[in-house]
Length: 304
Image (cartoon, rainbow, N blue to C red):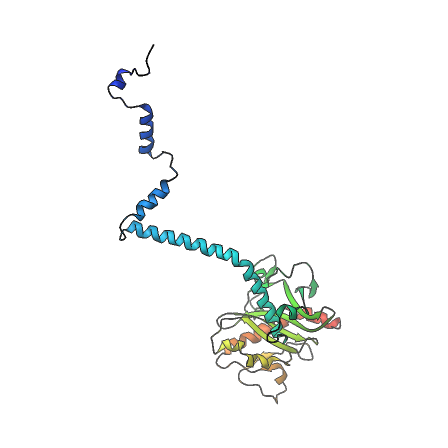
């Protein structure tokens, strides 16, 4: 019987163990299974290098970038609900402001309780319940071919390219009994697209207010569209004449109050003729039949 301690002549002569051969071959070929501490060991080795080592500098920079990206991504996810809530609150604040309903220190949600949001199909000029107005974002829908249409260049006086099929409107009161109707408007100024609201009285032709909540025009020039003194000049102006034609415009210079056209004119912005023209053009577009014109005419015929 062969003893366990008996060795073959090859083993007695120092022949390597087959298992050791396999392990050495795996290592040399790079196919050895990585150990759990392999990556950590490499990191430790790099960090142990001198501070002026290129490897260490790159490794530290990479680790910092990864750590910062994780923190930023986590913060963005956690703060998103708060950001959405603040954005919705800011929109309500601007709607109340353009209607002259925002009082200092007043609770916005409480003041907004008397405002009714409805969706409008701009093609038919009728109210619609096809879309959820809470989740709808008009300028985002304008990029979706299924929810928008391209505007022919000769008709695109507001310079917006595409127009969403649906738009939200806000009624101070309700659909059957409102004192103001607030319409979202936007169009190209000099450097940016101006986004805002225009509020019309229940006669659907007298302007109660105009407010831009997002614009990047030149501060002190076109940026004066945000100036409360200039915004105050809009109250009481007429958007339409007796024939129903859109007449409101921002003129160059100061309005001559003795002119027969004074009711349809607003003082121009000094040194910002292109921004002034942009405001005129965007209002003309959205108040005409391509925008809310058909919808407003339907309301007039219904005796709104």
